[in-house]
Structure formats: structure tokens, C-alpha cells
Length: 465
Ligand SMILES: *Cc1c(COP(=O)(O)O)cnc(C)c1O
Image (cartoon, rainbow, N blue to C red; front, side, top):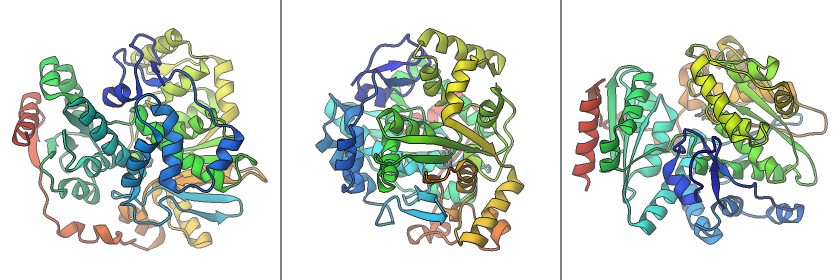
């Protein structure tokens, strides 16, 4: 399998190369040169597989030429062994025909673990076979940083340095990062905002000498391997509901468009998926686009669902590329205009192709609390703010006779204040995190200064080599 950039100006790459590279050199995102497909008989044969076996089968065509299904099976088995639910991704029916698939039973209680746990093994395997080492740097406002730290702690050949804005993440989120004791993990509390942290990461990548000396890499949500890993739970959910002999629909709370893009990839691979319902908070660029073709950036406003407080949904570029019939020049022009003007003009035919498959709703904080409360009152189901928005989107788009499966992306205990305000209940952390507030924290406070941050990264890398 080869990968091409959505902007057409980067070299064609293999799965392993795309894994390590993340973003393409031309600023585009890597996508498979052709979409692999499974036949109905292939899908039916997957019905009895365990989740790790199913994931290996689904990911194998994307990794063809680099990794075998047997290699992947070893890695998926190890990646999902630490999940604290026997079904790994359990599903429950909350209303007639409306199902919830829980993706939050991994170590950091958010769906990011589904892909990131596997990425830890993929990186280690690929780096060992090439005899290389890497330093992963990233900025986080919450879930991504902790998922990366849990996935890469104690892995050979990899150092991880995560920047978070000092005092601006929730305490649960900060402690999930700073209490992991491993020699290859560094946490920097930056005296600034999340945007400052992101700018520092970009500046480190732009510092060519530093980038080369430190072998910098990233595991942000545009990494293709993360998308590939996420396709597996959509396949798992669809097969359990009777696909390929029956249509299903999915509802997904959306920020960077990575999670719902994986659902769409499952459809490209041949699964009969009828509809994708997207849920946003007040940062609603995607639902505005789907309502009236208004793709325009606005300032980010904080909400009860912080992992969806996003102004630009980076993975949307992959869908756009397909909507444009894979015209990379057109895609590059539109994305560059979007960065310049803050608005994207999408041709009405392409927009209609998108709205034939996708719909979107947006809930503000009051609407989110009301949804959490009514789910609890009517179905005795506790959904975190992100998941509640996805469930509301699913209910709005439900059609008779087509199961609607909503993705639950975070454990309610990750957002105890929001849950208590909505339901009066404070959900307890699962057992493996019960003593989180007693654990010792380790992080360095660093000024918002590129030189000081680079020094801190260098000293971690040197002390661990
Ligand atoms: C990251 C995240 C999302 C958004 O997922 P995208 O792939 O960015 O659309 C939703 N909910 C939770 C809890 C998350 O951590």
C-alpha cells in the first residue's frame, strides 16, 4: 500500500514512512493511493473474531508491504490487553434503535487510547527494524497528551515531551500526564496558553538543526495510523448489528474530524453505512458547513467538552480531497485560501455530496447538560459531555429500521464537575486510577521561550540516552 498527499507535492510513501512522518512535506495529509475493500463474505468471516484479531485484519491492508496481519495481531493483542472491560469496546442500547459504543475503557479513559495504545507498539516495532530513535513532541489541552504518555512510557528508542499550559488543564487531565514515572517521558508546564504551547511545538519543528538533532516526530490526530486503528471499532460495531447484510448509521462527537473520518473509511472499504451524524459544541464549524455550506473560522470558545474546542478540523482535508475527486491541486488551493482568509468556498456539487452522507447538530453547554440529565433520567445512562453530544446527534438523525450507533468518547469520571451539575452524581474514577490524587507529580515549569523549551527537551533526551 502506498500513500499520497492530499496536496499532491510530496513523495509517495509506505505505511511505516507515513507513520513516522505524520504530516506530508507539502503541508497535506497522507491518504491511501487506493481504498482497500473487503467483500461481503470477508466481512461475514470477521464476525466471530476477538477485537484484537478483528483490528489486525482491518488494519492489515493499510500496512501491506510493511507489516503482516500476524505482526499486527501481536501488537493489537498487547495494545488492548490493558483495557478494563472484557469486551474492550462494549455496546449498550439506550433507546429503541439508538446504541452507544463505549471507546473509553483504556488507560486514560478517552477514545484516543484506541489508536494511541497501538501506535506505541507500531513505533517501537518500526524503529527497531530501522535501528532509529525518535523524540515525540506535542502540545495538549488535555486528552491527547495523556494518551500519548501512557502509550509511549518505557518504550525503547522513543522519548516523549508534552507541553501543557500551566494551570489551564483540568486536574484529572494534568495528573494523568504528570504522575507517569518513566525515564523517557517529560512534562513541561508552559507559562502561557494552549496556543503558546502549539506555537512552541511548531517552532521546534521549524528549527531545522534542532529537529534533525533530536529526530523530532509527532503523533497528532492527522497521523494516518491513528485513523487506520480507529476503523476497527466501526467495523466491530457494524458487524455486531448485522452488517454487511444490513445498513447501520453512526453518530460521532467531533473536533478534529479524525474519529468520524475513520467511520467514513469503513464505508469506503465496503461496509453498508448509511449515514454519519456529527455532534459539535458551540465551536460548530462543521455543523455550520453541513447546514449551509458556511466553512468559516471563528474564535474558539471554551465549553463543557474541551476536546472538541477546535476552530479548524484538520482531518476534514481528507474528506475534502475525495469530495474534489482527488484533485490535489484544487485541494491545495482551497486549503491555502482557507488559512489566508478564514473561509472555504466549497463547490455546491461537492457540498451536496457531503450532505448526502453527513449531517450535524451543535449543542451549547445548557443543551449538553440537558442531554446528560435526560439520558440519566430516562435511560439510566451516564454520558460525559462529549458522548452526550454524539448521542444527541444520533437521535436527531435516526431512521426507522437502521440501527444508529453513537460513539462514547470519554468516561464520565473525567468530567466530574459537569456530571455533578447535570445529574447531582459525581462518578468515581475506575480502580486503576482511584489513587490518582495521591500520586506524586513530576513536571517542569518553563517560560514561554523557545530556547528554554529546546534546552529542556535536549536535557531529557540526553539524560535518557
Ligand atoms: C479527541 C476527542 C474528541 C474529538 O475527536 P476528533 O477525532 O478530534 O473529532 C471527542 N471526544 C473526546 C473525549 C476526545 O478526547
